[in-house]
Image 1 (cartoon, rainbow, N blue to C red):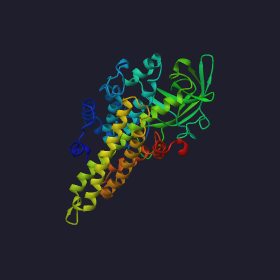
Image 2 (cartoon, rainbow, N blue to C red):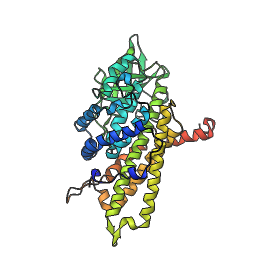
Image 3 (cartoon, rainbow, N blue to C red):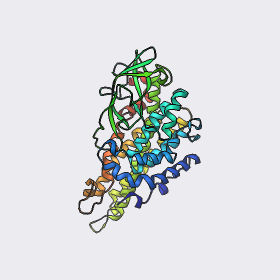
Image 4 (cartoon, one colour):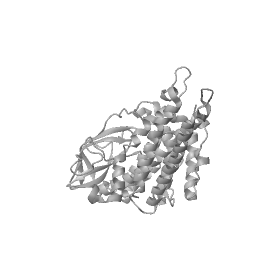
Length: 408
């Protein structure tokens, strides 16, 4: 059973009445690409243990050649110059995640995190890093998390420091769980700089930089993560993103954008689970009738259809607000991230149950068949954690209701 053989219920259940035509065209374009190129590679990407050799370079190159990496960016740096770039990017992530959340995560980090951070940089930074990034000539990564600092990105919590010198900075420290790091050409790294935060672009082949081996994860096997070590790494002043001291602001804005992307990936996984589950319920028989005839599953799928509608509307609204200039797009961005990823997690559990023993199999030895629900079950959990845990998203929403004086 493969995803290319099942119906897309989104096309009949979801009536996109408010999204600009530009975005609908991007959805159609990316869906055609994903059906043709991502779907055939998705099983191998999702089931091959993490290694540098397993990174889907051929698919990455195809995405670059198709112009997918140009979708988020302005024309002056070689991008599409779309009117609604954030919304178009989120829709791209949903369509990629429908077939592979690993691929969606690679693009999210490459474009939304690294690429968006670089937009704040000088003309020199954009020319040296952003332009080749969107052409696929360089792979980007973005580093905030450390072994003892992730949700808390305060000066006191972080231990990666950048010391100012006459010609630039010297970095010492360590970052953890850095996506794309094992294959990336550079990293945009958040550092403590004399009691404030500064973003610096560091090339990963510079002296003093060491990237660890890829982590072995429960899911998202195609999204490689690793530690990055900095030992007296000299960084020229021209590699400061924006101005010294603006790092935390840039990082938080970038992560907000990323949360919209993760909300879209959760929606894409939920839609894939829906389509797979409906086909299974219509074809699998028990006690003399198809499982879809049992009212329990009829009601459950009706609930999930409604929730997917809500998840998609939430992330589209958050993205459109960002395109209007609302950098943090609260509360919609927080709502979208929590709701979409929580839905994917809850639905993945249902989907494995719908498929029964087959849903628990990575591959059935008797005939080599496989069912993607187990892969999504593994992949979706990280979406509730990275780029701001779902608990933090609820805190952001609560602050908008009660105020920071009460919530802290």
